Length: 318
Length: 318
Image (tube, rainbow over all chains, first blue to last red; front, side):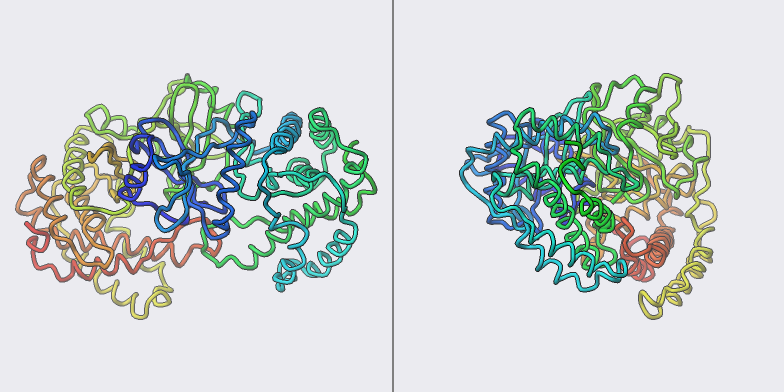
């Protein structure tokens, strides 16, 4: 679940008085998401999402995230829009946390990915990459390759999750880092475009949410994240039809260079390592009874093994 | 959190096709509640709550609960209304669970109870008791006094929570059961009217939710539940101003007999025991990592100790 901080009705009323969006009509914690506390908020003016930023988000990064969301929306990407208060500020404090109100997006995220979801995701990702081009501020990817060795060092108990896991990941990481591409096109990436961050309505993609892992990094790495997130079946088999649909739709909007295409295997390996490491770290460091859904690190390990077998971009259907 | 079962978008679409409420526009798990899976559902026709009934609810009881909610609403109690499908049925299956769609209620539950909340709660409880009078079907209270001894027997590890806890509760339970009133007015009670089940809007009580503990039992026992739920401060002190407001407002709608008033101490003791026992049982039997907020049994123990000191109804301000 994702309500770490509860908000009293008085605190909410005082907070809303800073805005021009009326008074609360309904207010419910949202069960999805793992990083922040999210509430569905209806006011006399309409529907909004209230987010309280919890410890994993660096407050110094918040203006960058909110600025990116505003920038992208100005260029046609449907994503939550920060709502500004009377003082012009979108970011303020609530219950001792940084907090923001954003607009409500219609749509339902796909609990089970079907092939027809994948082309819209590829197209939306490419559109996001193009729309971000003239957003000047940069944010280093705190969960990019430079962070992975340190993350693995902090997963000492890995073998309690699966025997031999630490050595297997360490070996893969060495290979990934030594083969990491040096000169691919860089831009602002979503970096976490899993199905629960993509809404569909009447069969069409209706919006993208949760930009709190976004960063300035290799654009094709974002594709690699999506290939992991959207193209594996529950039995860990890779669905190349989904991959082909995603990649073809991406390339219609932003064609990949041959160097980007050739880097897909190592980028996919890196993306699998990144989610494996954070899930493993959370698995080992989540106290029993914490209100967090721990995601299974072994799922990402299966992704990683597939990508380690990929000899070229042809493994992904192109 | 309260999403134990996730619902795929296809399953949701097929389910909604059984109703006249359009197609899904937004669908989010709700973080509140502990017994069932609840989703906030917006369709092209409006807002609804989708509930999947999890194992703690006896499916045979569901028609009684839904019938009670419809009955109460017909008599002016604002509570969720079951929505019937094309086939006239309000109850059907979704993802292998019993499921129902109910109407959406506006309002926000009070995270911090203030004295001015308590009179509306007392008045609403009395109105609920009167409105239920002509609902014929009865439901025995599965968590009433007849169940408490067995529940305590299943809490063998109680002393791991607090040394001496088992003996203290056993002693109180003996006293409560021996003094339990035999001939008080009976009716349909909510039995769980805690603050998170009462919505307020613009300072007025706007609705009551979660009737899945409702039963046919001593009406004044419902008052005792509310005195526990609404009148203790976070430091476990009893706020007699709140109690007086709650009781006075109740009695304006449904005056208590002298026998009912005199029974308040033992009823309050019983209500504290009931919540202590179910919380203790859950505390001892919730596996680490389960997505449930365990409620602290010690809180109810502190309530119980207060009520054991009460010599008469005067302890509650009347």
